[in-house]
Length: 275
Ligand code: DGL
Image (cartoon, rainbow, N blue to C red; front, side):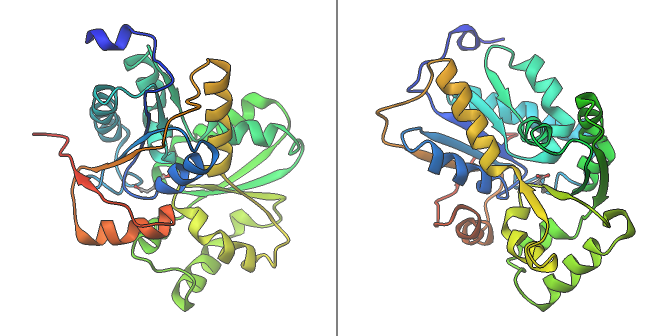
């Protein structure tokens, strides 16, 4: 392992964030809002998206390559802004890059559930990879709070959102079909276990006539990150918040879509994983 892995990071170093593509920008945006002085290096693996349909082994291989990029960029912490990668590669990355902190999007959500959802029935929607991994079920069981978790893979949603297809008749129809699944009835709360889904939160709320607790991880991950940086004295208090956005494959349409996820247009830089 290279030398720089051994040095204790300093507050000025950037925060590394990655996702299969641009959906993780919802998490990056929440982090940008919560931590305005931090610099961010975001990596979207647009060459390999979607992760939701990939095998665990493939996602692990991509995640290790991306971790190398973020470590080379001198990141002080890595946030896996993707549920599919969090469920497939978190344990591996924790080992691989063990000299820096890795934050996933699942654990902060589990902590949220532990604060008030004991004895409740909670639904979850996410990619096939996330649902099939059973990671959420395992972690919910470990809480021993008698929480019943009911999960449904909703593979059409991420590509639909990425195409800018939401808040229209077709998205209403698709979301309605999924949420009407027998598995997702009589819930006390619903977890949006995909970093794309905050963009359809309003439509989901509408489906439930705002009578459902809909939980998305972007804010809770930003809070968990801030808590960690504060505790470790790694908070950048005087930085000017420089951002870098790297993608393994560049297209104009990815760049155009960044606006909907990050709430402002960003410039994407092509950074191939395999040169
Ligand atoms: N944003 C990814 C997640 O949270 C899903 C998109 C994909 O399938 O690549 O799982």
